[in-house]
Every structure is written in C-alpha cells, then in structure tokens.
Image (cartoon, rainbow, N blue to C red; front, top):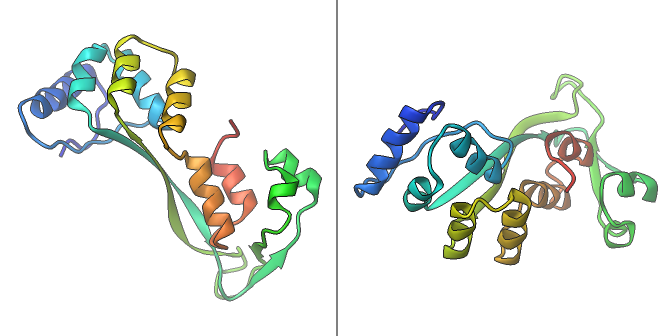
Length: 176
C-alpha cells in the first residue's frame, strides 16, 4: 500500500514494486480516471513505465443519500432535464426523489453517503494510446467503446434507483 502518490520519487517506487510482481494499491488525487494519466506524466514519469505497472484505475466520489424518513417524489421540467444533460424523452418515465427535510436528517433531506465510481481497465489498445500520448478525450472515447461507464453514468444509475437526487449528481459530476 502506498498512501498517496504526490511526487516522482513515490511514483517510481510504486511502479518498481508493481513491475517486480507486487500488487500495489495507491491513491492519486485527480478528477477522474483519465486525469490520473496526466498526473503521472506531469510528475515526470514516462508513460511506458507506468502502463506496464497499471492494471486499472478507479475514481470515486461520495454522494449524499436521500433521507428515507422524508423522501418524496418530485417532478422536473423538460428544461431542467436538458440543463442537466438528460434527454427529456428518455427520462420522462423516471421517478425522481428528494428529501424534504425532517428531524431524522436535521432538515437536510439527506442521511448517509454512497459511492459513485468509474473504472478504467487498461486494455492493450488503451496502453498503446497512453504510450503514444494520445489526448484524454480520445482515451475516454475508446474506453466507452470498450464498455467503461463513467462517474456520471454511475450517478445516473443512483438517481434511477432512488438513492440520490439529480441536484446532487449535478454537483459532484461533470457534463461531458
């Protein structure tokens, strides 16, 4: 375990450990999985070094969970859905919820947190793209084609499941 990689020396130690057959878990502060790649490059680590050591990259965010004691169904206008990057026709039948606020949640409408995640599994194609220093937008496109779901997708699934609110997902994720 490496608590956090913040500099080239720590990155190189973690990479060397991984290249010698050790399973290494670490953290890197970044907005999403593709930003991790940029962080390593900005630290001065050569892409061919870290792609050999990486199996996958996971990003996560915590979202607030709607309080079950005051959870109520809400309706969003097509305009609000569009502003949120959602197709009103596709989301018309989805039931949205929000907490109204109660004693159980101290008036916030939320109680607890849940993780939304994205996982980039480094395929040979993606490894080649990183070594060739392809733009992150291109890496994201290929990752989606290979079946990756992003933080926003995970958040939208939590909305569909009635776990969190549209406002909460809009607050913690970016529109593509």
